[in-house]
Each structure stands twice: as structure tokens, then as C-alpha cells.
Length: 351
Image (cartoon, rainbow, N blue to C red):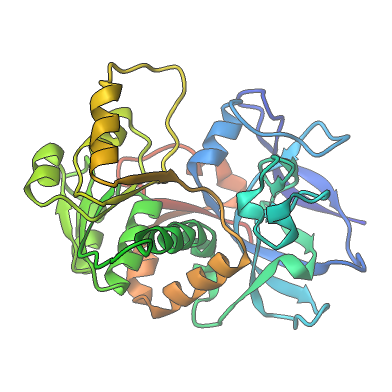
């Protein structure tokens, strides 16, 4: 056993996060020893720190945070060579398993028996060293390297696009225009994959200046910060990817889209808020126009592989700009202090 620095939290207890020394097994016969390079911060991490989410591993009071990670192999094992860049997969299948987990579709677990690193019952990756089963590692080419910290969020987007394509292909399918609401990391990565599909991409976000409009336009996509209803009704998109979880936006993209449109909800809305909605009118529109609305979360191995391929096709300079701020492990708290121009904030674990 060795002791390493890790960012931990007591799930359910607000502001209990701290940097501390924890024990990690090194030399596990079923694991590959990794040196963590960087860990991305996302909204789920912020919710866990706020005490709203998360479950510690069995028998432990604290949970190691972090699920967006890029690391290097510290000691070769299970076919992995020292120095290789890798990304650990977040979700693990239900040990029973359910029918989906049994075939590697753990992102579609039917009974909720899955576990997730840094979120649900498994320690996360925001620690100096890790030991991870090689069956749950994804290789990252050297040319992507440290940008591998974007693989996990890109895998969520890759899954969404895969399911959009599958649903669309239920019939004659020639999508032309996609609308993405939200220009955070997920929204901009969704826009990246949309442009790689040669679609007309529109991104809607509240920010009217800064990196978000610039990064969108560098992709060759359109950017809007007002007039969503007009945008939806003027040229109704064939595909909508909703990445904000904002109540009004969710309702608008459900009500105003093209006949036969596919709408994917990636943003998670806060519970406890109510809106007056004409359910009958909404139902009538969805049925008479053959619309599809579906939710998507997490990813399985093939989506990670798709994410690596998509990042490999992207302009590295554009990807670097997506990471707007880096903080050291010792200054982790600064990463959770939201700044107006943040897109993706990363904790650099390696000194």
C-alpha cells in the first residue's frame, strides 16, 4: 500500500471536500498502475461537493472525487506499456448483471445496479496514483495526450449522436440542420461532432461575448444568444441536442422543431420547479409530427472509442481553447469557483 494525495468528500454533506492522504493499492494483480495527469471538473462534481449527490464506497465515509481523467501508465501490465496515455471508464456494470450490462451496455443498465467512479460507490480519479482494471481503460494516442481529459465528456456526446442516428434511421433520414442549446463543454463537443457530420450547426447560449461565440464560429457553426423561439420556428432543426437542463429551453425545444425531428436531452434539470404546460397540445404535436424526444446519459466502451476518434479528427488548437482554466491539485478549490468565461476547468494532478 502507498499513500497519495486525493480530493475527497463526504457525500450528502455540503462543503466537506478536502485534499488528504489516502491509501491506494499498488501491485494489484487485476489492475494497471496509473499516474494521474489531469481531472476535469463538471456539474456533477459541483453537486457532490454541495451535498446534493453521490455515494461513498461500501464501508467508507468519504468518496474520492473525479470522473473525467487522463493518466499515464506508471507500470506496465495487462498489455499496457509504461508511459501510454489512457482514460479510465467511469461506469462499471451491475455485478449481477442485468441484460444490458451483460453485453457491455452498462450505460443502459436496467436495474440501477451499476457503479460509477467518483460518483456512485466507487472512488474516483482525482488522486495522484490509481490502480484500474485494464478492461476498463481506453488508450489515447500520443497526439491527443493531455487532451484526453476531454474523452469522457466527448464519450457522452458520441453516445447521444449514435442514438440520434439510430432513431433517425427508423425511416428515410436526411437531416440537415442541428440546434444545440448550451455552449458548455458538452454543447461545444456536440457541435464539433455535428460539424464532423457535415451538418448545419447552430448553437444557442446566453453568453454574447467571449470564448463561447468564438469557439462556435471557429467550427463553422452559427451562434445565437437570443431569439430562440424565432430561431426554432424560422428554420426548425431536424435534430436538437439540449445541454442546459434549463426548464424554459427544454420546453421550447420540445414544442418548436421540425416534423419528424429527434430531440436529445443531455442536460439534467433541477427538481422541485413547476411550469404550466399544455400537455395535451404538446402530446398532439409530438404524435402528429412523429417527433422523438429521448434522454441520454453516460457511455460504454465503444462510445469512448468514438470520442477518441472524434478528438483525433479535431483541430488540437481548438480543443486546447476548450480548456479555459487549469488549476493545481493544491488549489483545487479555485477550480470550483465559477468564473464568467469558464468552459472546461481542469485540475492538473501531476505537478
